[in-house]
Image 1 (cartoon, rainbow, N blue to C red):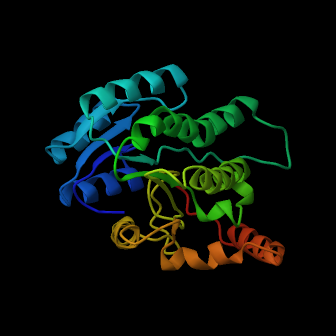
Image 2 (image 1 turned 45 degrees about the vertical axis):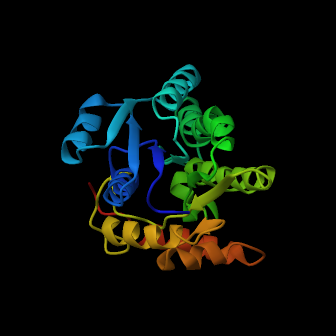
Image 3 (image 1 turned 135 degrees about the vertical axis):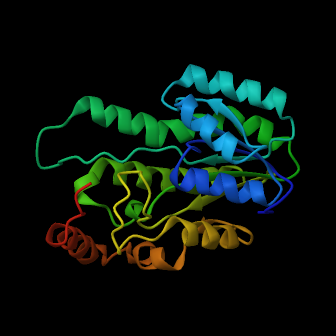
Length: 253
């Protein structure tokens, strides 16, 4: 995708990867609009980056998604890029009882949220000469994390959805890209400083470079082992990865 001259809407743009992408695109001369649930955090990003616009949005609310999309299309008729970044990563226990409320919230946020946001903009995007829908998935879409099983499953579903939407839009001006981050040290769970995690700045830098020529997926080098680990021999990799997390747990917050 072109890295300048776009009008870009990014969900979950107040922290972590979403904010990193927003600021990187802003520096390259794009018009950037970010959304988030908390006005105070939106205001903080806007103050730090004059020219970035903000809008409050809870991606679990279908009516609010429709309303915000309508307003943004009217205000920014040149809008041509939608980046679905908003997400949550709660821990769960698939060997025990289900927390049904948490499960529904995870699915609403991580799966139905991006699907609804993309659907709200797709007809508008088809009218643009050069448009892009981006999904932020995860390496755990391919090698799932047992301690966050439903999160992993929602990211696997996003990967599947991106594949089919890319095919469905193949004869339009809309391209579909998927960013597949490794473990990046952000506050998605909590910033831990764990040396196994990639730092945000190099992740954003490498992702921006890869986005320029990407046609399907954006996979930084440290995520490649996980992306390539899926397939007929994935069971051993899944077991090894999850046993490693048990033997070497995350540092306490």
